[in-house]
Image 1 (tube, rainbow, N blue to C red):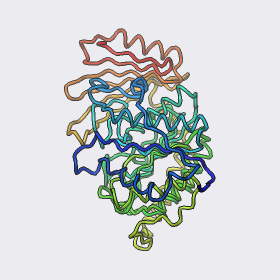
Image 2: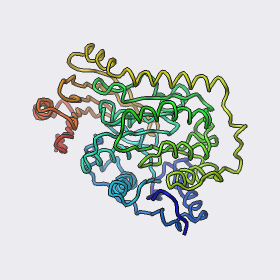
Image 3: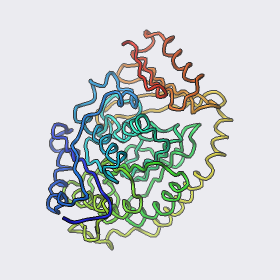
Image 4: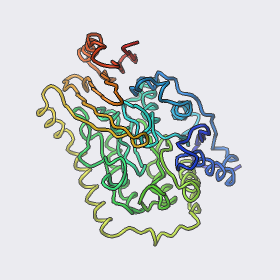
Length: 438
């Protein structure tokens, strides 16, 4: 038996019964090759690494995170429920101190699933990390949470769910949305009126290498985390920044992922994307596992790894330095920016959204209104239209004042069903969910 400095819990859920198609990159082999590599390296023999069983999520946590249209049962598969449940289980193991760190190697992924969800977009239907956060807030009363999304695609769903929640700091570093799905994640996306600056985006140029990612970590992410002082750090550990990924255009390596993980030192990591099934995932996952467990990862390298070939241009390096300065200034000036937004939006902050479901080929149109409240983060009203459904979704936030809570319930009770196909209410303060028609 070998010893290392951190106890690490793993959950491995390949989701054998869910795939988009037999040859689609989002299929069970994403994890099967990793499991083979783990066995080959003898990690199951390390006494500080524990394997836990996947578990099914309680649907109440889905209800308190998402508005699933038309119903949870109609769009959410068993595999999705197990993936979300496994994220919660690994969090339980960390919070109960059974292990110091946790890594949920699960699929399907979830970070493209918005608050309102009609089905599969970006290979995501429900948001595993967001559901886990809802659980942590309810069951453990954790107040300040940081989610660092290192997937190559912008975590637009996670951003949407925590857009107006300053207790959840969301930072995403990803390939620039002008060059990659979902076409979002720009520096001016900085959060809702009561949480300005608590959403931070780093759109990186194609072919950013280990050097660029680690620069962002050292010069932006870690300084912001030190100032935010989260109670827990979650890494949305997408691995499609790898230089061999077939869907993206970046130059990150297994060594880079391991170094990033060691420096970030998340309490919990949750697998998101990554579609280079044989050339990247076994090595990247192994590097992340070794880094979380405190094991020497210096020999974990892809067979074709060549750092000179992956070196980024000076132009990219200079751009990333300017980008980090720009985003850090947004963080430092967040109070001033929030004041200006409140002054410009005296009653409600309104934004229109058009959300494309790429996997399924349809579009949702949304009008979101956030109440400007002096006592809480404000009632959220969403009018959503898609697939012939018209939905009124009402969110009473965790920190809701009595006035906003009462207003939310009155709006739910007084709105006629005939105007909408669904009228839904999440009362996060009381942890209750209501729907009409019932």
